[in-house]
Amino acid sequence: MMSKEEAEKPKKGVSHKAVIGAIAAVVLVAACGGGYYAWNSHRQALHAQAIGSCQNEAKQLKTVNAAYTESVKAAAVKPAKDVTVKQDSCDAEAATDQLNKNAADMKTQAAKITEQNGKLESQTKKTLNDDLANANNVLGSTDGKVADNATRDALTNAINASKKAASDKKATVKSLTDAKASLDNAVNAVNASVQAKAQADATAAQQAQDAQAQAQAAQSSGSNGCSGYSGGSYSGSGYSAVGSGSSYSGGYSAPHYNAPAPSGGNGDYHISENLDTHGGGSWNSTPGLCVGNGGDSIGICH
Image (cartoon, rainbow, N blue to C red; front, top):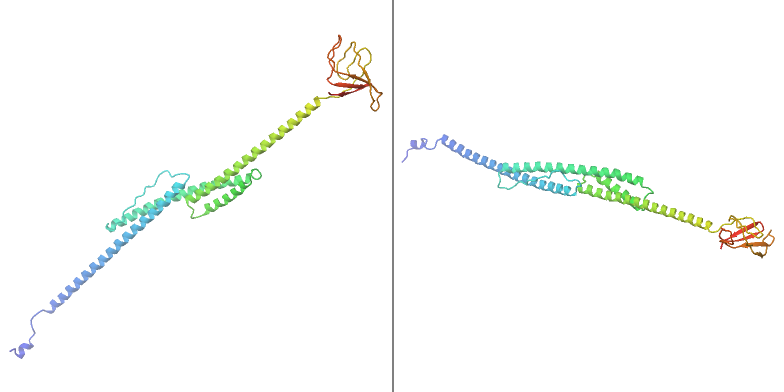
């Protein structure tokens, strides 16, 4: 049986230092475990962020490239060089650094394509503005010179639409090209209408000139068909032509007819018909039947 003195003696066993060391070891292990967990969580967060960034840049590159492709299709003047696009991988199994590298590469590509698209838009807008200046000149110089004024109204509408497109900050190459096409069509329609009116005016002028020439020809023909003249009369064994005909002398005497005298006449008329030759003389008479009243004569055409 243990005595009282033995019971009161300190017991031998684990020292205080050992206990403290054990506690410290536990704390260290816990700290290391917690640190690893925190580090691993951070690493996973960075990897997830890299995946997301890579996917976003891939989507942006695809969108930008699609827009540029449409611009090239719509552009009147094509770019001198094509743009090559490399769509990098965003596989979650890839290393975080590789994912970040791929994201940066696709971001650079998208920036270059956006720059190219901007240049194409600026070039198309400049072409549209040049066409607008020409369209305004055509509109101002064709007032009253077109066959159909509706073409000028259509040109006015096209000019207004093109101005709106050119000033639109969100305008695309396609919208600018479409506006230019409508404007060009309207200008061509006005020019065609100007030509149509010019041709119609020229045709009308030629017809008027032809009609005037025909009228003058008809008037000249009518005046040459019958002429009145006066000359002296002749009585005796010979015959003298009345008017501007040449003389004849021979054995012909014009028959005398009595007819009612016109006002101022004496009732004695000489009627001579066309003669070619008579007797030994020659006669060149003025065509027609001529009636002479004394010293006066009146030309009557058959």
